[in-house]
Amino acid sequence: MYFEYRDFNHAEEYFGGEAEHDWIEIGSVLDGLVPQLQPSDQKGKQGSPIFDPKSTNACLTLMAADRGWRNIVVPKSLQVFGVDFDAGKNATLVEWQFSNYPFLWNNVIRSEAIFKSDLKLAGMKKIRALIMVTKGGCFPASNSTLYYEQARSQLDVVTDLGVFDIPIRLVGLMIEPSATELEASWNVYGARYVRDIGAAEVKRFAVAWKRSAKYDHMRAELSPLEPVNLPAQGQPADQIGQPLEQELF
Image 1 (cartoon, rainbow, N blue to C red):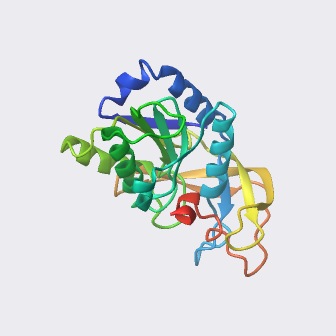
Image 2 (spheres, helix red, strand yellow):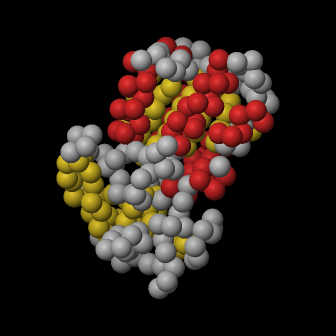
């Protein structure tokens, strides 16, 4: 999968040096990811393709686990900010952040607290950096969910002010800017809030581009190039595809 990233607090030095292999492994996970889409249930947009956060989260977790990255429990003193990190290895933490945009700061605050303290994480070295993976604003998505350009702008402000010190590599999952078609997994869920996909198949989608004014990025509009399954009547789609962070916090 195509992706972009921005470094904060000298993350480029860390991931270009002692943690180079950590980044190679996470980069290979991102490279191997198939885009995940699901049908929207938003009024006026029912059935239209949107980013599937739940399946993306699950795919990334499984692929990272194959490379030795595992779920890391947050110390009890910080569990007001959530119960776990999506992945960790050596001295690097990783979050797949596809939830509502305030959860960006949830993740950053607890990572910064561990970075600056003597808190120990089981099986981990002293924490040195955070990789935060989110979706690009090019993907149509559920309302109020975080996207890369938004996170980048916010992190630019707080790091310029010296509010946080932990090195952060912010990653955005993207559709290639020149793409006119996208091949993606089309995931249909059987009931509200279930985690198991009722039906999944790889489909092709046409990509039409428009410019978004707020963060000056390109936004894709996706339309199926072949027939796709849709949820049974009365079974919302984007409501059941909510990211794991929301369910766990």
